[in-house]
Length: 394
Image 1 (tube, helix red, strand yellow):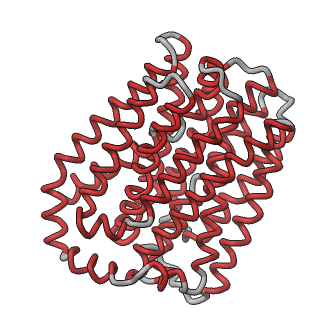
Image 2 (cartoon, helix red, strand yellow):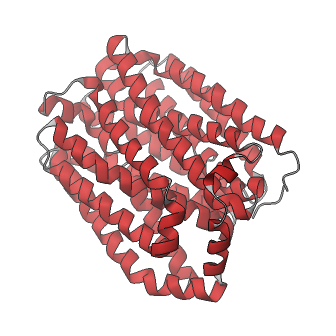
Image 3 (spheres, rainbow, N blue to C red):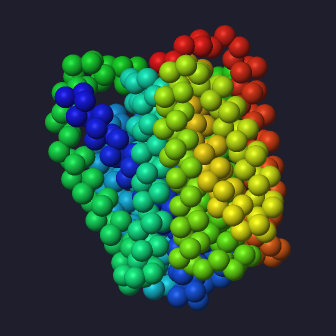
């Protein structure tokens, strides 16, 4: 039963990635068809991120009353609703309305599953599960590229993504009895109630948590800005065609997926903290490469390396959370980390869109370098404030 549950969790992580790259990979076409300003993608991103913040904060409440499986099923249903709405949108305000269920569907499910995996599975599963998120995010640009080129445009592509999400939703419903039995056999209900007794404010006061939140903030800011705007950089500054730019943006997700698969197996020998440092070093090299993107081959290489460097960072931070703050605090700590990440998603990608629209999209690598420096300092500061963390992997 536990194996079947883990297999479905892998599929759910795949479903998490499907909507994430839809907007960035197809935005040049959407903005042209609906006559929307190039930088207005940021407004939709803000709405999605605001929804994820709203749904992340009551995660403990939702899990207590709906159980984890109910929270997951409800979240996927909201995502399907948003994707279907996208496919029928004809105005900017309609895209904004559809962004609401997409945001609400993303927050609670991410915090719920990340906390569950961090407490019950080894580091390799956290890395590989997030690699499945990358596969989902990678699938979306390829689907959108195919529909932009041959099959009727971005609307039909969004509808296909909704159908895939709907199938995963049905699988999630089928696993509910199994998950319920596993919770009973593990005695997880009592453990969840004990964890739920630790409030967000008490958790926030734990040493090092503010730095962990800043680390997540920096990571999500860099990731979201990269996959939302690389296609626009290619089209608006380098004259790349829209369908080819969609493929370019997929290189980010190829990189992040490869990075997570590789770091998953590397986690058997290397601890989470060093995996984070390795990823940060790769991102630094990627930013330098994108600076010289006037050489045609360097832009897709820099995009892929950015994703590859991002690969190990996010799952390593999440998997380390129970070790850093204790299992009794991990659920609330995970929610607060997610909130910090979604605040970054709400603000930093939109800020870049505003700056780039009034200057040039070529500032993207410099923007990412500033964020990278903030993230790296915060991740090291967590270690300074929590010096006695165990070094073994869960």
